[in-house]
Each structure stands twice: as structure tokens, then as C-alpha cells.
Amino acid sequence: MGYDIVTALGRETVIITLIMIGPLIGTALVIGLIIGIFQAVTSIQEQTLTFLPKLLAVFGVFALALPWLLDKLTSFTTLLLGNLSKYTF
Image 1 (spheres, helix red, strand yellow):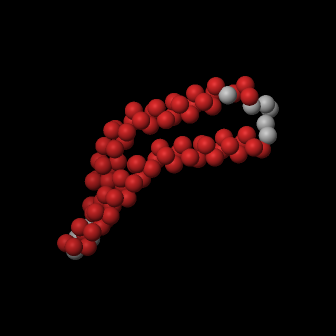
Image 2: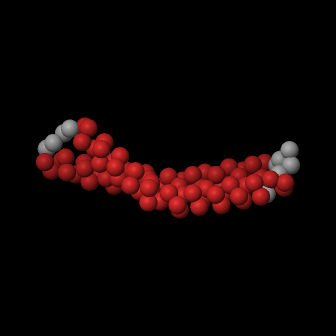
Image 3: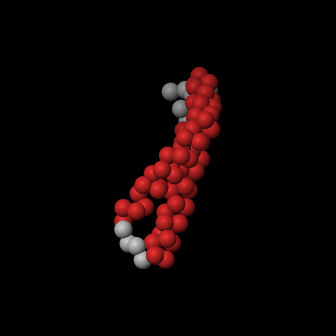
């Protein structure tokens, strides 16, 4: 297997991974920012206040995006396994 194939597969894997975790990380970031602003305005400095809203929001986005995530993962896996005969060892 040549270096160009390994590089292309690695690059594609990283891109798919970033695309799949992007909505989840973005949701956690936005919720954390909103709660941080809320804590700054109200002077509530409880560290555990951010955990439950982030958890629920990320779980909700994951549940909503699950069909799309599975479609992306299935198409990548199908492409990878479909081209398996082209990879020489």
C-alpha cells in the first residue's frame, strides 16, 4: 500500500470524524458560553451548573443528528470496503 493511499485514507477519516463531532462539540460550546454569561451576570459561580444543561443539549443534538451521522458513517464505510480490493499490501 503506497503512502499516497494511506495519506488519503487518513485525511478522509479525519475529515469524516470532524464532520461527525462538529455539531456535538458546537452545541456544548454554545451552551457553555450561554451558561458562562448567565453565571457572570448573576454572580453564581457553581461549577456543576454547566454539566446537566450541556449533557442534555448534546444528547438532544445527538438524538436528532443520529440518522445523518449513521448515513455519513455508512457511506464512508461502504466506500472504504468497496475499494478494499484496490489497496495492495
